[in-house]
Length: 313
Ligand code: NAD
Ligand code: UDP
Image (cartoon, rainbow, N blue to C red):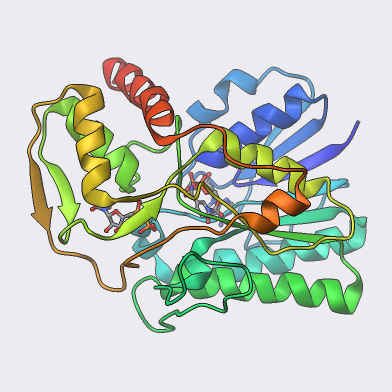
């Protein structure tokens, strides 16, 4: 039995990962400061004798004896990571240093949840891991993008200098049950607006694109990446099916049978115009991994989740 630490374990992705690793007979320590995570996400796991929850901030050192670490702690939605930009960058950078120090001492394997944001507003399409990106270092998204880029540097240097066993994945837009209802990300915003019959807020013309991955496909990719030998990444984990934001809005309206109207609001600065992962490296290195759940199927499951949540509130 492995003891696995998941930072950001009470968040959207982290809670699914806790569940998966417990189901595979591991001992799981879920560490979170509850900035964007919620106890509700992990409530069903509490009581499992192999599950432990720790309220802790990754900007402070943490001591435990562990075999593996998944480092997910960091707000992921623009409104949340911009709420306290300095804290966001501290979380990525000091969090990485603290968790890498822990990995070095315990000889644990450590996986970093990096992001497609390291490519910024990309000039290469689709994005391959070899692309260095096009990132504004002083914009409103920089606290997140540059924090994650610096974390990748720290991971790589701890590997080169101290032989730490690292893995880096670059996650593309992921959605599913347990996204925070006030998270502000596009999928949760549109579904909640459609279910409440409110206007659907498309920022800009809605011609910008994203490629949406269902959370179960991401978790499968993370677990496979952790199990690789002689491969540090970075590797893209995402669904290559690309949609404009207008197409997403129309799909959500159709699937919810909603009477909501689409309205346009100003496009936030530095909003990437296109994003699509090239996943050939993931397919090659992760035993043929590829996303199994396409957008409509994933949206239906997510709509069901938010319908139940809104009925409870
Ligand atoms: P989330 O906001 O739901 O989860 C982040 C978790 O980290 C939350 O539980 C939050 O409370 C916790 N956290 C934040 N700051 C912390 C701190 N200082 N100390 C301890 N805990 C802290 O977001 P998510 O979508 O689940 O994202 C998880 C990880 O995956 C993040 O690192 C994010 O950058 C990365 N990622 C996610 C996506 C996506 O589309 N969901 C895309 C790219 C990368
Ligand atoms: N977006 C939108 N309406 C919303 C929320 C987001 O049109 O209510 C747009 C946003 O401008 C961006 C895309 O949807 O172009 C994805 O936004 P999200 O915050 O989900 O993720 P990110 O921009 O980090 O990929």
